[in-house]
Amino acid sequence: MKPKSKILIIAGSDSSGGAGIQADIKTVTTLGSYAMTAITAVTSQNTTGVKSIVSIAPEEISKQIIFTSKDIKPDAIKIGMLHSIKVIYAVIKALENIKVNKIIFDPVMVAKGGTKLIDDNAIKFFKSKLIKKVSLITPNIPEAEILTNIKIKNKDDMIFAANELIKLGAKNVLIKGGHLKFRYVQDIFVNKSEIKIFNSKRYKTKNTHGTGCTLSSAITTFFSCGKPIKKACELGIKYVNSAIKLNPKYGKGHGPINHLNSMKVYKRFK
Image (spheres, rainbow, N blue to C red):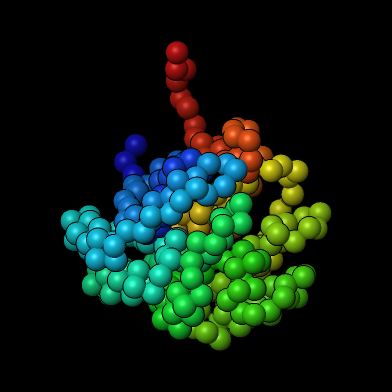
């Protein structure tokens, strides 16, 4: 099967394979596209937490983006973990160099186990410089609270926070509602002209490591293949929900989801 599109992923590595670059590659590949990477940091972690984080030099991140894209032009870009002002600046300059229009930004700030992955100055910098350059930003509830200084307790708060991000220059916002303890999960898509609420069944499981990375990569893949951004969000949410439902129950902590959930195997393997 020939890949349907080409995706460049700019994000950190997760040694346990559940989140970060590893989850991104699995998602893009499973959904039928070709994944390329620019690694921003290397983490040592497992399902119980993060042991260490080693940053990649900004100039090396820039080289990965530009050198890769000059040879194989990506149809879309997914951005994940950016942990410092220098890294964000290097990524912005590299993106200006390669000129790709479809960019999805997942503002990774805190690991599932609670470890902070970005400093406060970097948060301020991408609020002022990066948000306005992307097609969609996909914060979860804690990330949206940090970005907007709004306490989010319900659907109305999510919509209010999304509109604050629009004021900062975001074209489209998808706030993920999994952290709110309601019967159904509500993910809310907002832009200047519409609001769309996606309602999903909540599964009782601790195995949700990497859901944010996976969702943003799934959305990027569908978007790169020509789906409108709102439809790409809908399809990405369906993919992640299926991956949560079919999780492999690995590890002692917050286990990974099942990225292979939509693969069709046409022959039996021994």
